[in-house]
Image (cartoon, helix red, strand yellow):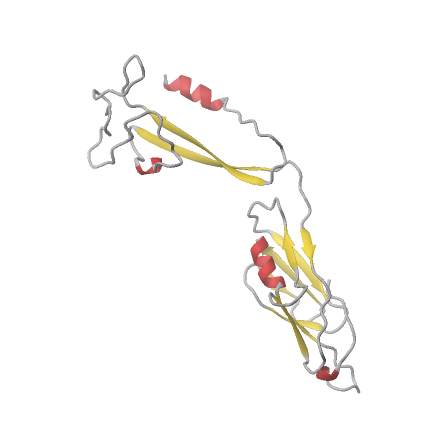
Length: 205
């Protein structure tokens, strides 16, 4: 019987409506070896029957129709009822990430500009099929001034204090937290007024 079960599981196939769902699923296999009669009804005989054969373990369900997603199957853990789960992420196309941003206008009078989560037109990225990846990266460049601070958390940041910084080894959420915590210091050309008096426009890419 065990060989037959293994053979069935080895040939298990799932059919889903689309190959590019960009969604996570979970496949759970529950194995129940309690003794049953010829009609498949649980008995109170050997191998546990209605109860777990080992003492001090929870009582297993008394019917064959319990829903493993509503019942803590893993709580039985040993002997008569066991389960294991495998995660699946269905995505047949590597979709590009989407980046949103728009223009920001501020008055002069400060030497720096903070591009944070409260900024109108803040940077935001979304990648529908990253599946929790922690190896995402981003490069941020300014055409005037320097990027003097990168807040947020996660991944590694290089190039602070220059016109280009790189963020590597981050999740999508971590990238967003970094990109929404950028401090840009305005230019202070030699012989000109201080950076707080600088006016003009520049691009953050």
